[in-house]
Structure formats: structure tokens, C-alpha cells
Image (cartoon, rainbow, N blue to C red; front, side, top):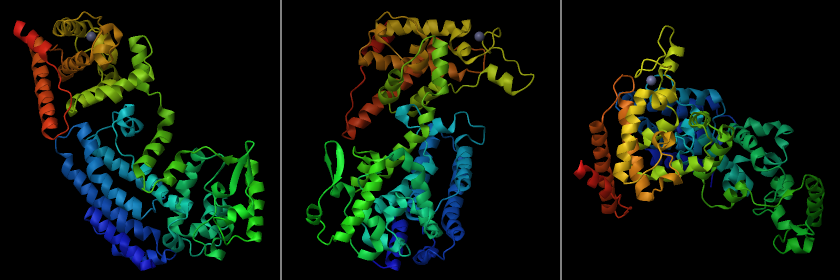
Length: 509
Ligand SMILES: [Zn+2]
């Protein structure tokens, strides 16, 4: 394929994917070395972002929930950006991305100060986050799909266009750090952006030489015109737990053109690499290389995991444990994020669960710290300092509410169980409740209803009553039935919630 053929392919691909025409300037990619990075940024990324900003402004005034806003970004904005990230991986400065994030944050938080940290917002839902796309990591994931070609050495045509001015093979730059000696590698702005991304994550991937490295390609790419390169995987053999080089005869069975001179080169390289050692067990990146697909999502998930690893113990988890007076294990939290979140398709319920866990509600105590002269006493009892746990649980006024909910919940479920804060504030039940799955589902619904109405009167002295609670449960029940019917109608049947106990309770009332 010629340069222009390759580039027009990029253009038509983009137009098909997004309905937005990528600037025709992209055809100058054929002379990458002379094209100006700033121009490409301006004509593609900046243009696209201006359109996105207009959309954000239009949506700003719609009454969309927090999860709805997150989903809007994921479904409307992410695909547009992905098509650019994939075809024009030239984002080098964090400044550009920081500006985008600022615009997104403004949209999500309706122009107000963010109430949940960015790392938590971008964390995956099954790890207790909101699943907001992290654009930087998506850009990096897309860049790595290009690097994948450099590692695999398979797409000859494209690789030849991208390396026409290089003296060495790709593996010299991605593994043997030749970029530092041969500066012109970085004069090419797509290459220089990509290698920057690769070097950032390489250290997470390998501490020893990976077996997909070809020591021959590293040295000879330009000279031989080969289309298949022997990798360490092809030429090494493990004997007595040590790597050795196969004989030239053995290698020649697959690579007939191999000369004695090249074999000597390989041996020389092997001696050096063997000092560091070889990575014999398959790592994350080895699996990506073996896949025929681009695997953007898989790569993204991994980058997110690495990026958020330091955030593992979230502040709110520690605070909950302090409030409740005992630790909550990761496994227990995970039952919330992985299992219970699937009890419902209703977004307002899910959103309530996430807000409860992340201690979303602003307390008198916090307001007192934020604004001088503001009282920090509880809005319900007017007596104690309104801390998060006080307002939700230990306050005697709130306590009356929860006692009522607890008494009625036991009647509905026809079971006696202790009144623990984690049951009601976090949906975190334990064996003492002796719930079966249906009980647990019902209980989750009725305590969520309680939290939703309690939060509705958050800033007032009022304590909601039983009728308001039962009304909310009715709403949830309607939604639950509707979800069941819709799912069945669409041929994806789910287990129907058994509401009989609740109906009996209502009849007896
Ligand atoms: Zn109080």
C-alpha cells in the first residue's frame, strides 16, 4: 500500500466511524517529517473538542443524574475521541488533556466543585467506582495498539512507512533503548508520542527481556528485507532451567535464509541479554500481542488498574470501618460492587448505593468548616456536631427513623435480625440475618427506599414517616416488575423478585 493509500484509508475510516470528517490536512501524513504537530492538533483534536464543548453546553441544562452524565460521556464523547486517538496518536502534552478534563468535570458537576475524587470517578464499577472514561488512559491504550505492531513486526506495509528513515529495526528502539543514541527517531512526531507512552508502561510489563524480541531485527531490519523475523521464542530452548540458543540447523528449518554471520550476531546479543535474563512466563502484554484484535478495552482496563493501584484503600472505606467499629474486608465490599449492583437496572437505586458508599452528602460539620460563621450542629437534633455518621445513624432523631424501618423490615421479611448500621447504610448484610437471595434482594430494596427518602429531607429537621417510605418501596417494586417484563420480552429473562412477603405485609397493615 502506498502512503496516500494508507492515509486515505485513515480518512474514510474516520468518516465512517464518526460521521465527522477528519481534516484533509491529514493527507500530509505522507510526509510526516515536515508536517507540523501543532497544525494536526489544531485541525483535528481542537476542532473536535470545540464541537464536543458545544454539545456539553447543550446538555448542561438537562436534568441528568450523575450516572447519566457519566454514561453520556462514555456513549457520546468517548467514541469520537477514540477515533482520533486511534488514527492520530499525537497527544504529547498533559496540558491538552487537562483542559478536556476540566470541561468534562464542569459538565459532570454542573459547574460546582467536584464531590468525588477523579480516581474514584474513573474507577471501574465493579471496583466501587463510577466508570467515567479516563481520556488520558484511552489515548495511551490506543497508542499501545500501534506499539503492538512494532512488537509483532507483522504489518510490513505500515511498518515500512513508519520507519523509512530508521537505521535499525523497531526492537532496537522499543527494547534496546537506541532512541537515546539515534535522536532522529524522535523527530517523527507520531513515533515520538508513541514511544513516550510505551516507555511509561514498559516497566510495568517486563523486568527481563521478553521472548517476542528479535535480536536479529534489532540490528538488521533495513539490510535484509525480511518479512519474518526469528524471535527469542523461536531460537531459545530451556535446558536445566537455563536458556540456550538452538543450533543453526534447527533455526534454519524455519528461517532458511539465516547465514552464519547472522547466527553469530544473534549469539553475541544473547550473551548480553542473558545477563538480565528472559521473561519465560506469559505476561499481560504477551497475551495482547497474541490477539488479532486491537484490544483497546483490555489495555485500558490494565492501565487503569496500574494507575489506580495506589488508590486501592479508598478513604471512604477507612472511614466506614472507623464508624462501624470493625473492618470490612475487600471481599465484602466486592459483593456490593460485583453482585448486589446487579440486583437492579434502576439507575436511581444504583446511584444511591454509590453515593452512600462514597459518603456523598454534605454534612453540617463540613459546611461549618467551609464557611465561617455557619453552624455545624445537626439539622435534626440541633444538639450534636453534624458529622456524617451522626447525621445518618447515631443522631437520636435519625435513630427513631431507623428503629421504625428496622421493626417494619423484620415484619416484612418475617425474620428477626440485629439492627446493624452496615445493613441499613451500606446494604452490607451478613450471616446473622439468615437471608436467602430473595430476602437479601427485598431487604436491599427496602433499605435503599429508606435512604432515598431520608436523603430527600437531608437539610431539614423533618424525619420522614412510614407512609413516605412505603410509597417509595411501591415505586421500586413497579420498576422491578417492569424490568423483569422488559427483559423477558427482549428474550433475556432474569430471575423474578418474589414480592409475596411484602404483599402479605401490606394486606395485614
Ligand atoms: Zn442529630
